Length: 363
Image (tube, rainbow, N blue to C red; front, top):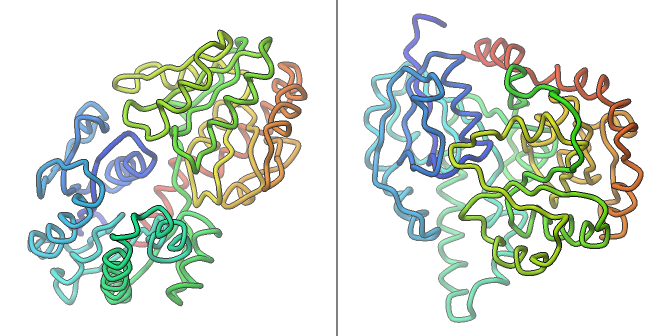
């Protein structure tokens, strides 16, 4: 493996999301180069994360979602001849049109975070949000992108994915047997520090994460403190700010450069995470690594990662604000401390060392 020249091609380093963090850790483990359409100033500074190999930028920054989508298709289709210099190419995100530029003997591995949801399982939901006059164009481009995606993914030598939930989706829509490689957590960063008087949410402020429900629950519990860590570009930011602006027990914090992020996790009572049918997200694993139990929801990937009652409190899939209120009241500081050992033990399954060993085996 050490003699092979490896590159990871990731669509964009747009923000500080778990996909970018995963690729960063992959690069460290493999000692590989990383290429991307762009490395945004909103994302991780790889050089400050001790990444010392090549960083290759293929295009310029663009944030408008659908314009970016089209530009990425063109960039990865026509500006990735450089992949021919490598023995192994790992694809991540919306970049697999670049597979056609690989040499026949190149090993092609695709880490599939999920098949594009606007094309497959959430197509109708996306379509419902599109303006009536735009719907025919949206349907047409979905058909085109679907054909391209299916052609390109079947050129891969191996498809890896992040969970049983996503593995099932890949099998259902693409008839491909993907292998599971759980994303890692760095135990050196996420550790128990102490227990202070607050609960923590650090999911994006977006409708699918349902942070608005978490905030609404704490609006009913003025004696319980909630800290919400958010990103400046989170789509539901203003809406959530407005509904809770008069509540002194709810604090919103943004962290430039992610400074202090691990301290907030290491000092909370417990974390809350209730997304809709999540494929995989590092937040609950990072919480467990820090010895902090998670108030979560019985849906998507979360069903795989839990030991209900030991590391998590699981709420019903059709969650109500009253369910969150009840769970927070029951998750007392004493109960959270009692769950610490089980949380840290469960997080061992996701530690970086185990991830690196399995990843190298695939090379």
